[in-house]
Image 1 (tube, rainbow, N blue to C red):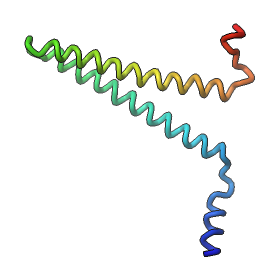
Image 2: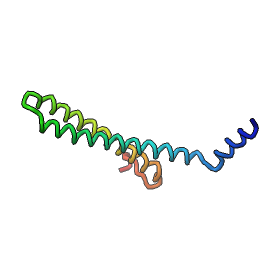
Image 3: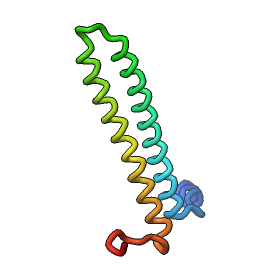
Image 4: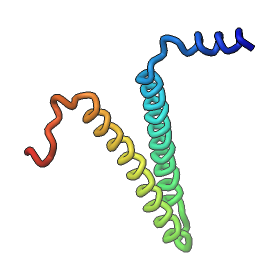
Length: 101
């Protein structure tokens, strides 16, 4: 039991909280990029479905395209928001608050 505790303690030695934070941020960014790529591919697929639609199905396909565009915009906005936060956190000495502009 004591050796198991020592192994766990040594395994975590040298890894700072900021490293854990960086790893979590990298995972989140990766997930956001994957979500955006998925949404962008969906836009392309739904666009092609709209173009290939018969007259009676065209309206439904158009609305699906608009929804896919909205999803892609939301995913892109999440990436932009994360990038803005990262820039604010990493360069607070250079950051100018909007109220100071």
